[in-house]
Structures are given as C-alpha cells and as structure tokens.
Image (tube, rainbow, N blue to C red; front, top):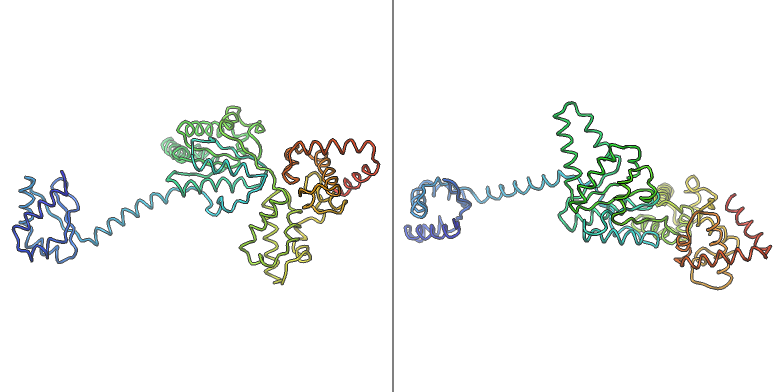
Length: 450
C-alpha cells in the first residue's frame, strides 16, 4: 500500500466534504504517521486538534478511509510533541545500546601525539595502513619491542582512528584480561551459568571487527588460554576481522608459546620498535611539555640532560617531566636550568649517566673524552675532529653491546650499516699499531663502567 498516495486521496475527499475554512483549520497541518492492521495514527499540531477531530470529524475520517480501502480503521490522534519524544526515546535507546559496548580505548592516545623518529617510523606507517583497510592488509599486525617504547600508544591510536572513521566494533584488551575472562568460565556455579558465561565470552571477543591484544607474552604457561586464543584468532582471521597484537619480543622469540600460535603471528606483518635515539627523546620531551606551565621556563640543555639520562624507556622520560613539574610547582622558579634540574631530579636520575652497555652511554663518554658534543657526533660533519671519535664510538657500540650494525647506524644520525662496518674495521686496524688509541679506548671504557 502506497501510504503517501492514500493520504493524498484522503485529503481530497475531506476537502470536498468540508468548507475551505474548516479544512485549512483542522486538516491542513496534520499528517499520517502509520497505517497497519486496523489502526491509523494521525499526527496533529495541538491538543485542540485532537479534541475537534475526535468529537466532530471522527466519522467523516473513518468513512473516507473506508471508501478508499474497504476497511474500517480505529483512528488515533497524537501530538507532534509526543512524536518527537518517541523519536528521541528510540534514538536514546539506540545510543544506550551503542554505549554499552566498551572498547577500552584511551582517547588521548592518537597518531597526532605519537612522536615519530627513525626507531618507530615503520611501525607507525604500518599502523596507519591498517586503519585504512582493517582486516585486508597486515593481518595480524604484530608490534614488538621493549617495554615503554610506545607500543600501547600506537595500538590505541589504531583503534581510535578506526572508530572515528568507520562504524566498526573495536576491542582493546590485555592478555591478562583475556585470561581472566576465560578462566571465569570455569568459576561459574552450574552448567547453565557456565554455558551463558562461555557464550558471553565468545560474543565479547569474536563479535568484533578489530581485536587489539596487548602483551601477548603473558600467555606463556597458560595452555588452555592459549588454545582459546588460537580458536579466537582463527575465527576472526577467517572472517577478515583485524587482529593487532603486541609483545616485548618477536614472534620467533616467543618460544614458550604454542608453535601454531607463533606461526600465525607471522601471517601478517611483524614490526619492531627500537628504543628512541637521542634526537627522538628530545622531541618526545618537548612534545610532552609543550602544553605544560613549564614549557616557557625550561632551558634546552635541561631537555638534553634528561634525554641523555633516560635513554631506553619513554615512561622514564614522562616520570622525569612529572617530577620536574611537581618541583617547579612547589618552588616557582623563574627559569628551569641545569642547577634546578639537578636538584629536582637528583633522586630520580642517577649521577652516573654513562650506564654500561647502551649506545647513548658510549656516545656521551666518547664525546666527553674528545671534547665534542653528541649533536656534532650525529651530524653530517666529516672533519677528522668529528669523524674519528664517531668511528671510535661506533666501534665501542659494536663491541660493548649486542646491537646490530643497522641499529647502531640509526643511533648515529641514521647512517647506513656499511658505514658502521667500515668504522669498526678501521678502528680494529688502528688498534694494532696505535698505543694512543688503545689508551684512549681504555680510559673511555673505564668512564662507562665506573
């Protein structure tokens, strides 16, 4: 039944059977809401319309519809205001249904405030690609690296971006949360409750478009939970749902996880995030303080001091800024200089910033010995005054750490691994003939290990 056509025909009948004044007063501003079974609902603008139409025109309206449809309908009049309330109630109900779904995402973690450098650029690029085609490219996306390097930030950024640009259902969880939910099935009191809980568990983790699971390494030793995650992974992957996983080590290094799980982690794209180099640490610090009260008070050398001292973990950088802000709030300094920073961070940053075994420590010690700056060492300058200390630092980075040639190259201004190999070969050759170089390296090592 074409309700629009029926309503037009109805109005024609009423117009012919009433005078123009009555028609314009009582029928010109009403509309048909619905017609079904034996009931017609008509929307009217005011209460007086309900009274007049019901008392004076009900039979006329009933007869008009009878002549058009052959059916005697019950007629109901409702106010426009009531209709709006009904629509609002339905909208709120739908909204509440949507709001009941908890994605667990942290809204403040976005791509915009994820500071990019050579050590995490590829990971961010891959993450953005996933947001553009969830489930179709890099599935699963496996992000790995040491704690505190931004893996969780990047995963939340992916989820937030997908939710902002699509209507897809996203769930962020940790392996601990997944394990707790799964083991909860066994804790239910009877078989009926057990089945209901199991169904809720599957609905939560499999009825999503994007599953983000953090710290997968903590499933080690939980064999039944691993089995359940295996089935969850398969169900999502077969349905082309996006899976994003993080770990503190690569899939190949998760030896204690089931082989069938580890092999699936490599189906998509494993990407690693390295500890931030000096330049990236400085930019992270500046990004974190730009909206704080201390932003216009802090000296550049304080930024560099913190970046040198906190060289592996972004959370450690955040901790240093938090302490600096707290100390500044108590003392209200005019400037935050090195003297102030040393006092504020004396219990947080160790006095010996040349901690053994990492590249920034080696760079600092070499630069102090040769009386150049870290910035000069990482620059493109090729004078012997800069180039030779740089080669010494590269050699020590290779011999005193487990880092690869490409990783060392990144820490020295993004140089190619072949440059690092050449530097190591040259210093090894010079050590065979130069007692001065032997003494210099011995002194530098003592400074690093003190």
